[in-house]
Image (tube, rainbow, N blue to C red; front, side):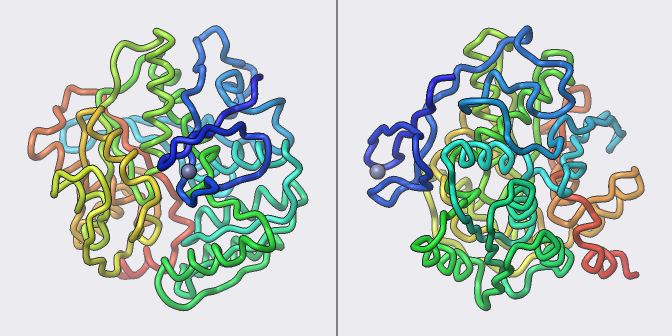
Length: 376
Ligand SMILES: [Zn+2]
C-alpha cells in the first residue's frame, strides 16, 4: 500500500509517514490525510480480529505483532424500554479499547524500525502500549500518575516495562513524558495519529456487525476523543466509498467533574475553553487538556451529536446497573450508561432508534474502586 501522509494541524505541512514521529517540527499535532476506505468485498472474513479490515489501514505490509485485538462482541440489552447494543471493547487483549489504536500504531512504528519507546497514561493506554511493546520485544517505559489505580500499574509492570510514577496532575505526567522524548521515541497514543487509524476499525466493525449499516447513535466515554475521531474517520471512509449513506450521531460522554469538551460545547466554541477540573472516579477520561479539541468538536457537530457531562453521583448507579445486565465495566465506561439514561429521558434518543454504547474498559481493571462504589 502507498505510504501514508501526515498533515500538520497548524502549519498544514504535509510529510510522508516514513520515519517515527509524533508531532510536526512546528510543535503541533499531525493528522493523517483521509484514508481510501474499503468496500465489503475487501473484508478478510477469515480473520477474527481488526486485521480483517487490513485493506483500509495505512500500513505497508501485514501486521508484525498482533494479540488478536478487535472483533469484540456487540450484545443487545434492554435499558429504559429501549433495546441497546453494547459494544464490549472491554474484551480486548488488555481489557480496554486502546488495543485497537495501539496495535495499528505500533505496527506502523515497527515498519519504520522504531527503537525504545515510552508513553504517558492514566492506566489503560499504558497497559496496552506496554503489552504490545513486550510482544514486539521493544524496550518500553510508561509514565503514570502516582495515584493511578493499582490494578492498572500492576498490569503495566507485569509486561516488564519500566513504570515511572509521577506525582502531581495528569498534565505533570505528560510533561515528564515530553522531557523523555530526547532519549526514546514518544509513542503517545494521544499525539501519534496512527492510533486513530486503529480506532477507526471500531466504525468498520459496528458497520459489519449491524449487517452493513451504521447505527443512529453511538455513545462513547471520551477523554482525548480517539474513539470519536476513529468513528468519524471510519464512517467517513465508508460514506466516501458508498457503503453507507449517512453518518451516525456521535455522543462524547464525559465526567462533569472534568469535562474539557463539555466546557467547549456549552460555550459553542470550536477550540479549547479553560475550565475547572475536580477529581472524578472516571479516571480514564479525566483529561484536562486534550490534543485534538478542534477536530473532536468538529466531528461531533458534523454528526449532529453532542457532549453529555455526567454528574459524579450518577456513575456508581450506572455501573451497578450494567453489572446486573452482565456487563462488568470500570467506572470510566459506566459513564456511558449514565449518559444513555439522560439521552433517553430527554428524548434526544428515541427508543426505536439503533443505539450503540461503547463500553471501553473492563471492571477487572478497577476492582478496588468498584468495591467502594458498591459498598463492598
Ligand atoms: Zn506544523
